[in-house]
Length: 243
Image 1 (cartoon, helix red, strand yellow):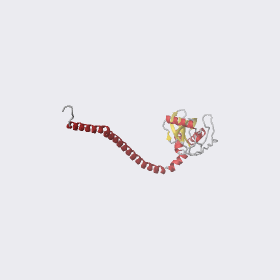
Image 2 (image 1 turned 120 degrees about the vertical axis):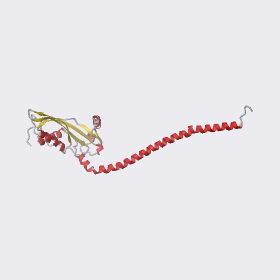
Image 3 (image 1 turned 90 degrees about the vertical axis):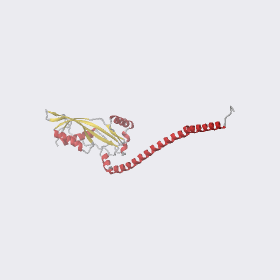
């Protein structure tokens, strides 16, 4: 009869509805949950990789602690060997001793500005880092650390100043001066060396840049050097002397 749905048609409709329900369930529920499951699985895998990485680092950290402990006896004396602060008096004193020991003639000394080279656990290897550390030092004030304050290395402040020494001397004497700087117990290093032969004197004449270092926070009190031995001259910074 027209207008009536047969039983077979009802079955087909129900079957199609069931198929449609299954399809919708798959795409709207099952597939969505599968995507989330895949995301969670990926996150779990990454966290497991991170745990494995950190576990590996732990063993390396243990090895590093053991390795560092072997050198503690060397590190502490090294830190203690730094003067606690830089002064022109101490720097000139050392330059005078270098002249006496080597035999060169020091004609003039140009002191350099004091700048940080180490700031609270970080070695400053760029001008921008040094400038930022200087800003921090100026802002916080080094007065928070006295000359006898003892702090850990991650709180120490290291500074340096480069002095330009204009001098003259025999080749062997200039080599002696460079060796004296290298072997001295005071913390200093040689920078730019610019010397030329002076035909009028038969000597080498020019300049040596010497950098002096200090470390605030190692608890070593500063002692003024004895400058009473200085003899001052007119033609050169120090007067006549005999070795």
